Length: 275
Image 1 (cartoon, rainbow, N blue to C red):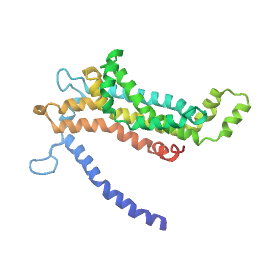
Image 2: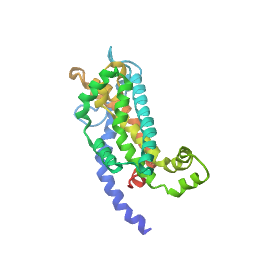
Image 3: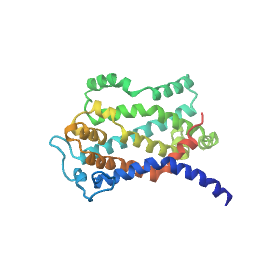
Image 4: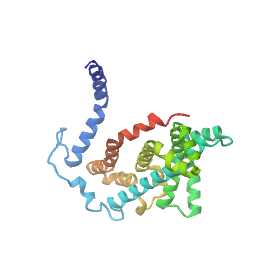
């Protein structure tokens, strides 16, 4: 009972601090389905005119919202799969193998992750043009996955460091190959961290704006972030109600992911920080 009483002040403080954000979301939801009455904050008649982008194209030449949604889903999912696959192997090698210059390589990973992406845009633009991948979804996926890899490798290396050597030694003594030991004995031990990394990579891909805007400007390669930008780009046709409705549509999957997988996301802070 005493423990619960100690928690309540913290809950109250968190509620006060988060109330502006909650109020902002509430008003965004309300104004996406009902414009406020002139001179007041009270909502007017409810209608779904602002949500018309779900069943019709807004302007000629602009892709439908569903094309942008599919592109965003492919973009975020492929990035998550690529980062998890490469980080799970590279992290294991850095954790278990006594590689020459390993501390310097790990330090380089941190520097690469901290390096501002915008400073690399021109070089990336030239490389993608040379490879014929400019204005393609594949090109942006490769770039974003490469930029997320340093963080993923570092996190997975920390999770592998928490796995006891005795588990691997038992597999080796039973005659299993190094790959089989990793696949059947070690990898299951770090599945919570791998799941958390996959979720974070998916969210990073879902929210990416700069890379698709610069490297895939075509209408058929638009993602939801650049689709929203195209809606507010023309000041003469700016519709705040429409923009808020698209914003709600864009943010809903992110909110659902956080609500469903919040325990998995906490594994990043609980297990992937050693070493």
